[in-house]
Length: 329
Image (cartoon, rainbow, N blue to C red; front, side, top):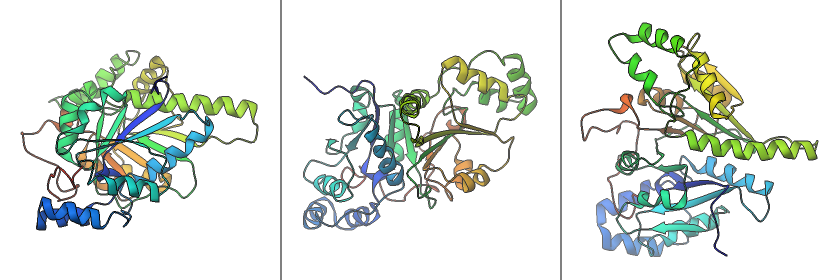
């Protein structure tokens, strides 16, 4: 019987998000593809250092012991390496003890086209062009930015997400960005407080996290000593009275979160410094400049906040390494 990906949280991760590829990228840039292939072969047993998303992926995979033999979380490498140069990536996966056995290597072609085939609710990459292309095709993708912050040392997986433009659509954000500004936004949200927003790019990811949390809740009933290890938080610039529509939207969708921070413009980094989530998702680059100091931070390039002239990038926050079919992954 074929292995099915139903009833699992499936995440695609590029090697550029999982590992620190700065040295490999620099070698490729200086010496070219032929020398790069030899370099990777010569260094196949030199373990790549963790990248920004490594901690999140490692801890998330730890939740698989909730359902032994039938993993709740499936992480699949999606890489623009070819199979031979990708060997070092998989060898590093093994040496770090990550329970990742599945990979896609597409030798310079965009692997994100396989997101739908694997029922992924999230694709993480350090390459902006790959993420934007995936989003343009309707896939849930996030750009892992340079982040100095790391999650807490315990084994609880803490996931924090912005609301508008990440979990929900950017309908309200578009009104805020209009000439009416904050006043028009608040009036609209009060008038529509009982009208749920449309799904955003990571709505299915949130549902998959809730699926795992439901299994944890069942575990606490049968095992009174069990403490849940997955915590989900919303960190949003909304505040009262606009908070009601956000809460009602989640309720209408049938999903829950553990925490909600309605900050009304307060710097989100102040919250993340205390929370220390393993990963944080936001649709606005300006917020990530603060949050990336305290958590692995991911830009969701979706909606009005990311409508910019073609070719304009967020390069101030991402690696300056060029887009490459091998090292860029």
